[in-house]
Image (cartoon, rainbow, N blue to C red):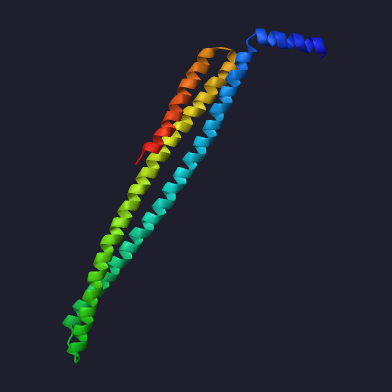
Length: 180
């Protein structure tokens, strides 16, 4: 292509509204960057929910283990009190020790249960935030596609619709910060 042909082509492009198409292409790029950022936030929030659920499961396992120990000590105390023994003082001492452990562990159970329930609430919050990021991601993907169609069809209706859907996606992502 010669220099005068390049100038002529540039003139034709500007007359055809290619300057506006550059702005549309830039807007599509911005939407794509926002999509990437929100995708990362969504993935991290899903990971947070999974890790917190794992911690919750560990707390409930700890609760169950301690509950089993309480039942075992309780059964041991019952058996000791029912069996004849030549050392009643030693048996009573062991029963008293077991009751002290049981009381302490019952208090521990209350604390472990509270921690597990708090972690469950954290999981629910993380999942709600992740759901909003997922919605935002889907809306932004649609916005990128619709806006890109404008570059092919030259119909600005697709671009405007894409921008509106993109704005809805950004608002959905922003609403994830409001989840408490």
